[in-house]
Image (tube, rainbow, N blue to C red; front, top):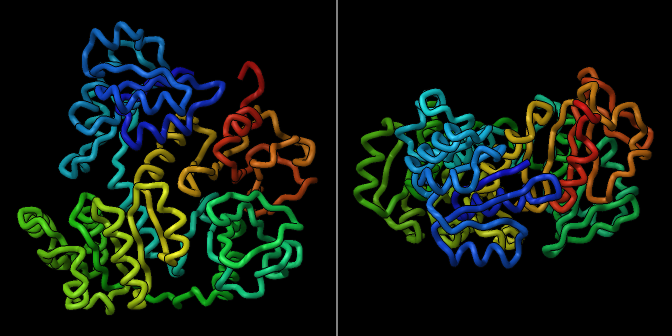
Length: 451
């Protein structure tokens, strides 16, 4: 498969990292030669220093021989133009990033008008993910699969003293659940039954949603269906706007803190009366406390500055705000967040990359979620009759250590598999995989020859 990515920013780089393997050949094009030079130092991709909006450039690169073009430059109109032009010149599939909130209600129209196959809006997708978490009854993050029957959750075991210094096979609490990964001091560990858990380990647990709720109760993380009524959003960014709009439609009162006066006026004009827009600095702790931060049910740090989001999220946690979320973009901050105890760190780049990976892998793949800041992924696959892995015990598939079949949903029943379990036609399979093993994952779950 040949893929061309136009735009070597954070999203373009993340996509290239996730896709580069033996069967996908990636080309990255950008106007900035310095950025491309840095990419070439650590990634096996073809780099082109050129303007992707020029017809002669696409023709010279034989765009008609490419299976997919993804345009993720910083300009919406440029992305629309490139995706439409590439499709007209013979590229099989085109994807465009369109971020402008004014376009949000007409994306389907754009797809039809400009013959674009798929449109992504990172800020809209991120606001949807935050909203889903805010509406959840628990104070730690669920990822849902298999139509809500299977969940994956991560948490720090310091909140479960009985887990510390125990071997996994000794844990009675996690019957019918599976620990698929441990994050320890920045390292990822794929555990086995004899792995000893250590204080401050973050564990990733997969299983039937109802069984995972048992752990939630042990953690005392259930807030007894406490309804989120008051939310403070730091930053009137696109994410802040989308989220405030969605929350207000659900009858939730929202406060947005935004330092740019002109942006405050724009937000006040566009949002309804349930949203109070306050002009002020996000780093002014006194202002946030005067605006009753301690009385909020949730706090979201959604500015363009990771440090600001983290600092104020930490203050919100100190004031015992129920749910605290920080938007981050730097991978290096992931391990800091684990230590700070912030409930959820959310990365728009990972969310968008997950959406694109799901799309390009086709109809068999129902969802893809990047975890551990893109170092691993959870993929949900529907087993068609042409899959190579059907009717074989999992122990005989010789899966690499970094690939774990975490759950099988057979005729609506969730099975946490063992070595003797088999994948049958129509099953939904939830698979955890390290990013380094994704090529192997695609090999194991590809269709039989000729299909």
